[in-house]
Image (cartoon, rainbow, N blue to C red; front, side):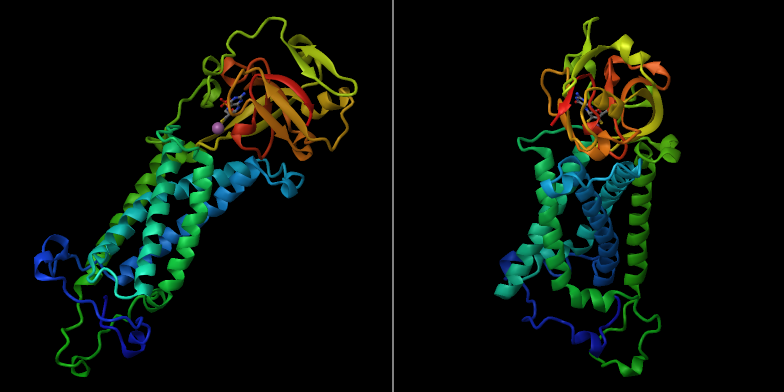
Length: 410
Ligand SMILES: Nc1nc2c(c(=O)[nH]1)N[C@H]1C(S)=C(S)[C@@H](COP(=O)(O)O)O[C@H]1N2
Ligand SMILES: [Mo]
C-alpha cells in the first residue's frame, strides 16, 4: 500500500475473510512470511502499470480488428470497405505492432508487481475468490499467448501446429473478455489508487498507535519500477518502430526484415513461390464478356499510371514505394467487366495462402489500384512480382498479389 488506507478507502475492500499464513511445513520459498521484500509490490504501482498496459492492449485489439476485417471481411462488410485513406492500413498496422511490442515489457513489469499474490494463502478464500483467480489465470495466459504469437509472427516464425491468424484473433477476444472481467472485479482497487495518494501523511497523532508510521519506501520503489519500465518501453519502441515509421528507420536495430530491391522487404521470394522462370510468352488473362489475353509488351504500351502506395505487411513492416503500371479498372473495362464488380486475381504461383485474392469493387475501381509493371522506375524484379503484380491503396500486404496470371469477375 502506498499509504494507510483511509476509512473511506477501506470501505472499498471486498468482504473476504482475512488472508492467513500457510501451515508450518509450507512456510518456505515464496510461501514464507516476508518472502517478497520490494515495497513496489503494491496496488498503486499495479494500477499505473495496468493503465499503460490496458491502453496498449486495447489499441492492439482495435487495430487488430481493423486488420482482420480488411483481410477477411464478413459478407455485410465486403462492399463497405474503403480504399482510402491510402495509408490507412499502414497506420493502423504500424500502431498495432508498436503497441504490441510496447506491451511486452509492460506485461512483464505488471506481472512482476503482482506476482507475490500468486502465493497468497489460502489459495482460495471463497468460491468467488477462486473464480476471480481463475479469470486472472485466463487473462494472463491469453495475453502472454497473444504477445508471443504476435511477436513470432513479426519474425515470420511459426513453431506451432495451429494456424496463426485464427489463434491470434480468438485469443484476442479471450484476452479482452478476461480483461473486462478483471477491470470490473478490480474496480474498487483501481478507483482507490487511480490518483496518487495525497503527499502529506496524516498527522502522527491521528494514527492509532498500533499502526506503523506511513511508509515512504513504496514511493521510491514505485518510481524506480515505473522509470525502468518506461525506459524499457522506450528502448523497445525506438529500436523496432522503424519497420513502420519512416523517420525512425535509422534506429531500426531489432525489427526483423529482409530488404529486397527498391528498399522493400520480401516475405515470399520468387524462388519460394516457384515463379522465377516466367515463360517469355507469358500473357495475362482477363476473363469477361470481352475477355482477352495480353502480353507484357502490349501492357507496357497501354496508358501507364504512377502512384506512391505502401506495402503494409501483416508481419509488421511497411514501406512506401513508387509503382508504375496499368490501372486495374482500365483492364477490367476493356474486358467488358462493369464498374462495381468484385474481381478475383490469381497468381502464377502453384500453391500458397496468397495465391488468389478477391478484390471488392471499391478497390478494383479505385484509380490508384494498379497492375504494376515497375517499382521505383525499374521493371519489377522476380521477388516483387515480375511480370505483373497488384498494388492497391489501403490494403494489407497479403492481398497485394504478385506474379499475376489471371483476372476475372468473382
Ligand atoms: N502470389 C503471392 N503474392 C503475394 C504474396 C505471396 O505469398 N504470394 N505475399 C504477400 C505479402 S504477405 C506481402 S507483405 C507482399 C510483399 O510484397 P513485396 O515482396 O514486393 O515487398 O506481397 C504479397 N503478395
Ligand atoms: Mo505480408
